[in-house]
Image (cartoon, rainbow, N blue to C red; front, top):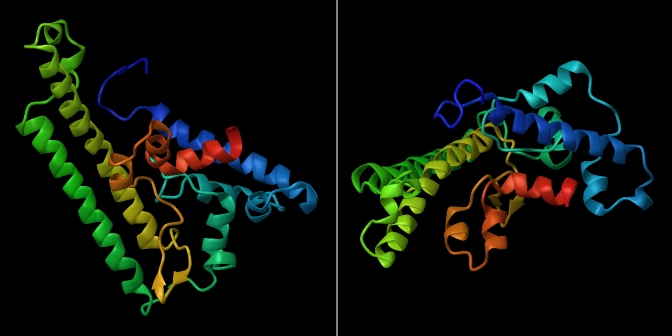
Length: 228
C-alpha cells in the first residue's frame, strides 16, 4: 500500500486476506474440536479440527496453489479430507478413469472466464465506459443526469466482469484438482462445494443481500460461519 497505493499491481493485502480467513477459520475449527458435540451445530461438527495440523499440513493448506492468491477460501477439514481421500472425498473421481470427470467441467469453467474477460473488454476497452472517469470532475458535467446514470451502470458492469474472470479461473483450478467435489446426484458429479462466483445468480439478484452472497461466495460463507 505504501509503494503502489491504488495501483494495478497485486499488493500484499490481497494475499493477506486469504491468510486471515484461513487462519481465522482454522482457529475456530480447532476450538470446536475441543468441545462436546452437544455444544456444536451440525456444520461445526462437520468442519471441526480435532488434531492440530503440523507445519507441513498447515503450509500446504495456506499455500495451496488452487487458492493462495485471489482465493477461493476453503476449510482445512475439506482440504485434509481431499488430500487423504477420506470423508466426503472418499468416492471422488481419481486416476485416469476419473480424469474426464474433472477435466471437462474445469475447461468449461475456464472458457466462461475468458467469456467474462471478453465482455469486460467490450464494455471498457471498446466501449470506453471507464469507472475511473465517473470519479472525475469532468463527469459531473457529462451530458444529462440520465446519461450519467446510464454511463455509470455500463462502466460498473464492465468493471464487475473483470473480477468474474479470475474467480472463474480459480473455480476451474479447484474443479481440475478435485477439491470442489460435492458428491454425486443422479449419476452426475457435483462440483459446487467451492464456488467463488455465480454470475447469472448475481446479475439477476433482486436484493443487495443476495447479490453479496454470490459475489466472492466463499468469503460470504466464511463471514456467515465465523463472523456473523
